[in-house]
Figure (cartoon, helix red, strand yellow):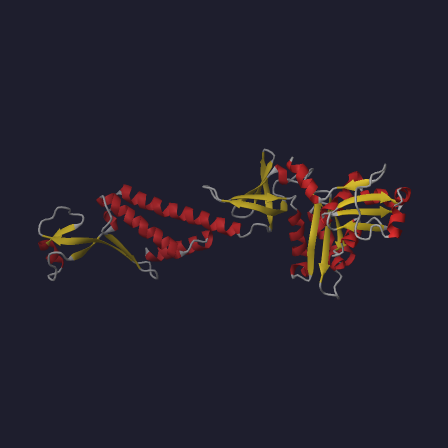
Amino acid sequence: MNKELMEAMTVLEKEYNISKDTLLEAIENSLLTACKNHFGKADNVKVIIDREGCDYSVYAEKEVVENVEDPVTQISLADARMKGAKFDLGDIVQIPIDSHDFGRIATQNAKNVILQKIREESRKSQLNEWQCREKEVVTGIVQRYIGRNVSVDLGKIDAILPESEQVKGEVFQRTERIKVYILEVKDNPKGPRISVSRTHPDLVRRLFEAEIAEVRDGTVEIRAIAREAGSRTKIAVSTTDPNVDPVGACVGLNGARVNAIVNELRGEKIDIINWDDNPAFLIENALSPAKVISVVADEDAKEAQVIVPDYQLSLAIGKEGQNARLAARLTTYKIDIKSETQAREMGLFDALESGEYEDGFEGEFETEGSYEVPAEEDYQEESEE
């Protein structure tokens, strides 16, 4: 029996990540519960378990008295001396208890104690494991749609991909493998409740870390990400190693590295730009692929005036303003884009040449055809409203 018990505990330890000490503690508590159900109390019962061989003994400690009033906790002097001649009044005698004497109900209750402990420890172990994996990307298998949410099998546990965290237009087939970002892990009586996302910007960050060794080892650092899930992402990268081209490292030979990420995101476009501590140069890079004539950035106001060639205005703004909008989010600057013609009509080139904007600019410039993009914090305020 002890051999089977050891084997069972070994299986439980591997399967549910429950330590043998925890299981032995559960067995000890179950024996105490059985004694309490059988005798009515278990305050004087001691369980001794050999941690190595799983041999166990159960004893009831009884006080030697002249007249027995409580047979569960007391023993007469005559009966005590049948156990050993050395006993005298007031001594404590250990009386072995045979667990085979327990009734069916007591045995069933003891079994339930063990099973409950296994469930609790399994849930606790799962919770700790998945809480440590928050903000990671994992691969899951699509199980089914629950309303508009998607149930995703992560192995030994299911996660929920809420509708709000799904990319608009993405449709999943049952048994399809997808990568998801673990948003949050909450405790729940039935086990950890895991929420995952396909829209979070850090999904892109983690995919870059997984796909690109230079990002993973810190040679290339991702400084900022702006994402409109399912459509386009802008990502700014830098490096402290003069021998490494951060953009080239992320793109890979013939675009192989970034294409692997694009495929995982089902065709979402990814613009990779060089980070620059100078906000004017950063904004110029962020508006790529559009060419920029000049950028005047006010670091205090977090605003920037950008002038582009006439033929580049629509490219700088992007379809429905997306390129400029993502650039604003990436840089956290409010960006006002004007064409070269508009800038000349407003006298902005004269102001630039005269040095009026040397320390930044004041006010906002508005004219027909210009495009002004709010900074990231303005988007957050609008979304909260």
